[in-house]
Amino acid sequence: MIQIQENTTIVGVDVHKYSHTAVALDPWGQERGKLEFSNDSLPAYAAWLRTFGKERDTIVALEDVNCYGVHIVEALRKEGFPLRYVPSVLTERKRKQSTKRHKSDYADAKRVGKVILTNYEETLPAKESIADEDELTTTRSLDLLLMERRDLVKQKTILKNQLHALLHQYYGDHYADNFIKPFGDEAITFFRQDLDTTKAGHCHY
Image 1 (tube, rainbow, N blue to C red):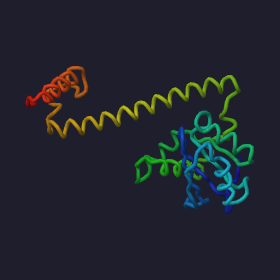
Image 2 (image 1 turned 30 degrees about the vertical axis):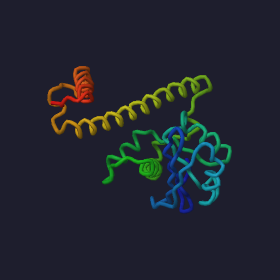
Image 3 (image 1 turned 120 degrees about the horizontal axis):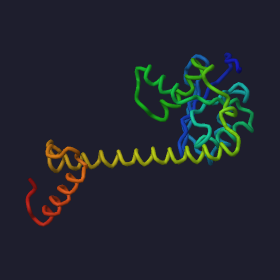
Image 4 (image 1 turned 180 degrees about the horizontal axis):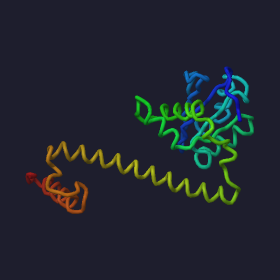
């Protein structure tokens, strides 16, 4: 077990497909720095980590070590940095306990780091959280599918919110009153027909 000492730096990382956010903390939870980086700039990220001291004194913590975070794990392990896998349930618990519950890449990265300070024994060395090669291939594939699904759901939510705003602007507060689901088949059929007739010069509602 790694001992957290006065010269230890804990770096929480919020991992995504195209970019990552890292927040460095001292042993008392005070921020020492932050950085946004990508898999293309991992050497620069490693160099940034070294500004806090020796590799063995800088603990890098990630929620995701098998999928989007696998390149970070592989690169930093070769460089000699201690790596910890932080189960997402622990960072979610931190978020619920916080007075600031908003989600952002910066806030999530900071929470990942703080889990190391308060719940170290519930985390794992990153290398132990990675299965053998056959299992790893399957896990990566499943994780990628799940993350792609999350991305699609997120994009769908954004589009629906935009459509809600446009319909509200056009029809007013009660645009969905006549429908059980504002984006159900009946509602979509009505909006399409009504907007088509409006284009032809007729009034809506």
